[in-house]
Length: 168
Image (cartoon, rainbow, N blue to C red):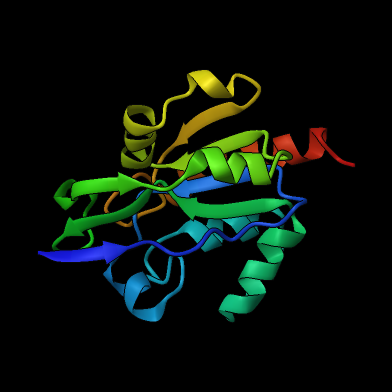
């Protein structure tokens, strides 16, 4: 079983929404890119929310997120896991959210990409001290979660609604 570590947060001072996964999968870790598995629908969903074509270059995807006030990180900082399934995660340690939220006070919405990210945050971080934030658990964009693309996209539309009501 491998000891793995997540990536740094993709965030800037303008970020209003923080999307949290659990831990990058094997392919993402190998490529050092969030959601590198082509079967994961994360990037396709995010770009479709803005009615723009999906970029192929990772750097352009990151700039697109930042330009739309969206940050990206994982709840888990390190863990042991065989393969990519969240159910195989053992001995998880979470990232330092207290510091992140202090450094980036414009974060108002936290979106969890699936149940494991939500459960780990709830267990190790908690919601109580962040009563000025809105926390929402979404259906995972992972290929292991098999509801349709359109059903996932319809849930994830809340991101666009938050951004549209908070234009500055």
